[in-house]
Image (cartoon, rainbow, N blue to C red):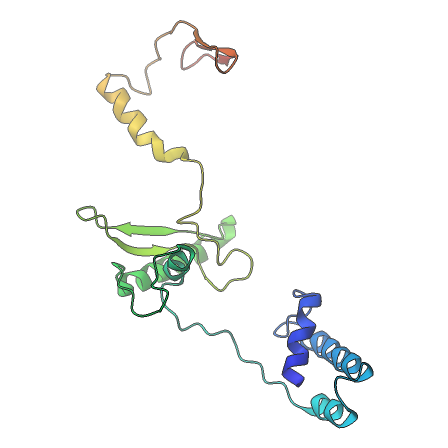
Length: 206
């Protein structure tokens, strides 16, 4: 009864009533829940008194499951896991995945003074396309960003395209130190504006 009342108390304000951080406030809310149950006739005086005196033993979160970001990814994909349960075989190398977790933790610790708080790594076997490791952030259990899978989140391609751009320009014998040739204005009727590229040291106007 005491544990059930504690669980019923937490949703009212999960952050302020986290029993691991604010036990006294959570306990006070639990007593309020028990009082309301007694006032509404759901428990008698003896049960109420017993629940108030019953000790609450908190157990830290279970951290014994491996490769949590991969597990979450599999659970999100309908049809990947057999509905009846059972063993699922993946290409992930667990020892490599754990080593990557350690590397990320060390790097984040070294970059803490630069406000770097998250990192993600995916290791792929180029010959087969197998995913050998997938780590989406630093500590999976860290409140706030821990369970955001940075390896799988949708984002802008950004600098990932630069090597292809540089390769194309090197094949054209154009290098960063040289100016870009001047192009004629290109009309984009579908977008409703004119784009004019002048030179690499010039400007782009619309």
